[in-house]
Image 1: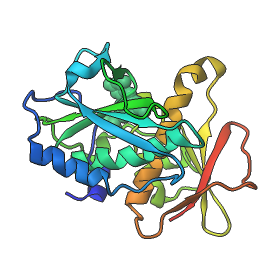
Image 2: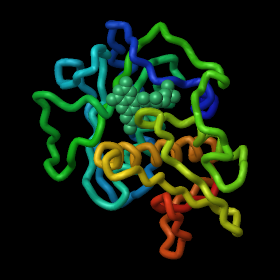
Image 3: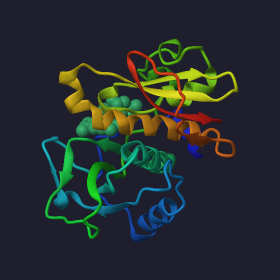
Length: 239
Ligand SMILES: Cc1cc2nc3c(=O)[nH]c(=O)nc-3n(C[C@H](O)[C@H](O)[C@H](O)COP(=O)(O)O)c2cc1C
């Protein structure tokens, strides 16, 4: 299955076989990561593939492999990490492997070589017996709740995964055919916990729009974008 088809079938997997991927399969993943599109060229990022022995988590299940994601902390680095590694989530799931973004897991006995890059988030992955999902099994907000106009071109973003399925994205249409993307303002209590993850979520939803429009997708931040009362402006894009 290709990455675009995977958008309509993927699901977070929390049930893995113990059997690890072989060296060729891990090599193929590394080669794919070398080709990824980024949202912001200006930010250094890196990743490491580790086993469960290098993971600290209160979650009751384990996977054979984990991606630890690192980045410089500048500009829209959280959105950038979401954008880059959602392509990896789709790549893994397109090969019938399981994967899950994990806010609730951090590195144990592991130091990144570049001390300027900070640990951001983890993704679990590995073989699984769980299959794909049908489109009517996605629990998502309606298109009219996530945009100023019902627009089927936004369905890939609508189906994107997000922390606690919070779906913090909102899209508006500009007269020149471009779009703005906004992030929901959460109340102050909730924001303390969700702000970091919700920025990653925005990048994840943009990755789905990139994968469905690889030739035309262009992201930029405007100085003159309209501000909306209950949302933070995150950027604009063409597709
Ligand atoms: C940034 C982020 C952090 C997440 N953290 C966790 C986590 O710590 N534990 C977990 O079980 N799922 C986690 N998830 C998975 C979400 O719960 C899941 O994506 C969401 O409920 C939608 O379900 P789906 O991915 O199957 O479409 C996370 C997802 C994202 C995007």
